Length: 292
Image (cartoon, rainbow, N blue to C red; front, top):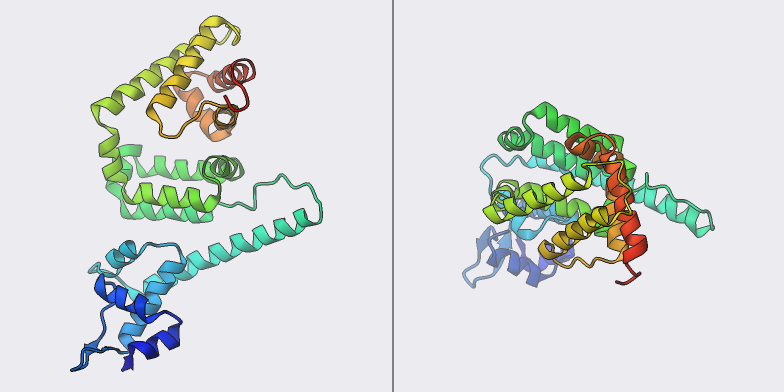
């Protein structure tokens, strides 16, 4: 048995942190002395080690507690999975360090391959394996979801570029996507409210009108009016969106990516995505200032 002070000295974790873990039920001491002092055995230390690995991987304490309390939690299996994720993290860090070294020397490197999506793709695979019913319900089949994952792998550099533009980093993008997948059913229920359905319908109608006649000049008042309606709809229903050039450029980059282009053309007709990009670009160049 070790006292809380001995555990703190061994692990580098403060006694106050260990007390907090006890208070929230994350790591209870193995025993209490007659005087009320906490004691920890080897099993408790192994659990603490597991907690620290989860923390290193970016898990929140609440999430770690839920994982450890699952009846089917397998400690050895968890260690193997944590090792895989840490190796992915190390490989990504090594690539970023190599890229920074090149940039430090003054080289012009516009490659985004170093910002790989391995962690995100792994999260998608886990979601597929653990939430089969949700996958089938919202993607139609496991095969469709596999195609979705493969498309991300094929366009990894482009998806990474968009992720960085919209979220600031691959890590923040992955964290946001992990949260969405962990709460997928709840989010889908929320998104299917009548109000959101109506917004989706309005957006669909506007994109349909925008791509209805691809021979019409994108500079025409009719097309630019539709673009303006679309952007106003986005701003009205999205938090912290400013219709300035940087944001519209993100939309342009989004519809320029192969991944989004194939989905857009499938929904609105071949060439629709390129046409939408031209319409947005004309609007940006002729109607929007740098800071709007």
